[in-house]
Structures are given as C-alpha cells and as structure tokens.
Length: 317
Image (cartoon, rainbow, N blue to C red; front, side, top):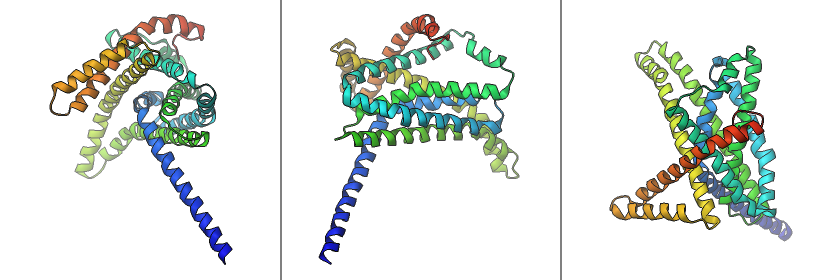
C-alpha cells in the first residue's frame, strides 16, 4: 500500500511539473507572440489579395491550402532551423533579424511608393494572362506560400529572440505554440474577412429589415475594412522593420539612430503629464517607421534592379 501511495505521490509531482511547464510555455509563447504583432498584422493584410478574382466557392479552399503551407513552413522547416541557430550560432540571429527587417522596410516602402507614384505591376499583368483558373489558383497559392515563408521566418526569428527558455525542449515547444497559434489566428481571421461580404449578401436578402440593413452595411463596409487593413499592415511593416534595424545597429554599436529616437521619445514623454508612456511609444514607433521608410525607399532600386533579376524575377519575392 505504501508503495502505491509513493507511486501516486510521484505521479502527482510529475503532473505538477508538467502543468508548470505548460504554463511556462504558454507565458513564453504569449510574450514572444506579442513581439511579432507587426509582422502578424502584415501577414493578415497581405493574404486576402490572393483570393481576389476567384469564385466565392474557391476562397476558403485556397486559404486552407495556404494555411497548410504556412504550418509546414513554420513547424517543419523554420522551427528546427531556429533551434539550430539558437544553440549553435546565436550570433547569426541579429543579422538575420536585420535582413528580415530590411525586407519589411522594402515591402512597406514599395507600397507607399506605389500609392504616391502609381505604376503597372508586371506580376498582376501576368496573372491576367493566365487563362486556366486551376493553373492560376495553383500559381497564386505557391506565391502566397513563398511570401508566407519570408514572413514566417521573421515571426519565428523575432519569437526566438524573445524566448528565455532553460532548455532546447522548452524553446522548441514555445516556438511550436507561437507558430501554430499565429497561423490559426492569421488565416482564421483572413477566412472570416474574405467571407464577410458573402455573409452580408445573404443577410441583405433576409425578410428582416434589421438583417437587411446589417447585410448592406457589411457589403458596403468590407472594401473600407480591407483598405484600412492594408494601410495598417503597411504601417506595421515599416514600424517593425525600422525598429529591428534600429536595435540591430545599436547591437553592433552604431548608436546614432537609436540614441536620437530614444532622446526624442523621452522628451515627448516628459512634455506630457497625461499618458507619458503612450506618448513615448507613439514617438518611438513613428520614428522607427520613418527610419524604416527611408531605408525601404533606398532599397527599392537595389531589390528591383539587382536582387530581383538575380533571383529570376522582377521583385525580391
């Protein structure tokens, strides 16, 4: 009997340790996930364009294909690579983060440049020339998964840099939770967004006046939502990309951008008696975004005229 009680005691102790580990993983994943917020917003803003032009019945299947590709990118390819980096070449993490930051700055700046100086897009024109819808769908999905790979790499690297785990198993579990959680959140949100106009059309045909009004509001409002989401995504790209570069330069003892932004943010917080912390964050994020925009604009000719052709395309994608 005493042996059985001792065994139950051990089982209870193991369960307690396991529960604590789960709590630690969840807490670490939440902290790491928060660090990736800007890239997540960008990911959610980018994805809906891949289902534009397709029949409503194909929207969710396309999103599901991209979701599976995203999970494969994060869990099968990027997670093991991230763990190898963290444990055998941690000095590479900051340079890789900065490479991803430059990519985000380029993407954000290119969108701003396109708004200020509208021009044709050869990739859109190539899509329009494809006559077979099935072939176009496969092409769109592959393009989305490639773009997701770059964004996912940035998400996983940012998450890895934020994780303070005692061992490789905790790191791996936390990264897996972040990867799966981010994928479900992003593509679940995208699925809801792209189907809201269909929901609105269905409600607009209802017998209820209230439902008809809500349905018409959804149909009219979704284009505005998509535009706002795209604008927020662009701002998030520039903010996150600029912030990564500023902190990366600071890491390598190039302190001018970091020191100037910090000084201006501190001055803004001291000038306000109400919400000084918020003022400091707004100034920091805004200046990080301006820095990201400047860097991104400088990268446009390099990416489109040098890197793009070397990779066999017109853009860095």
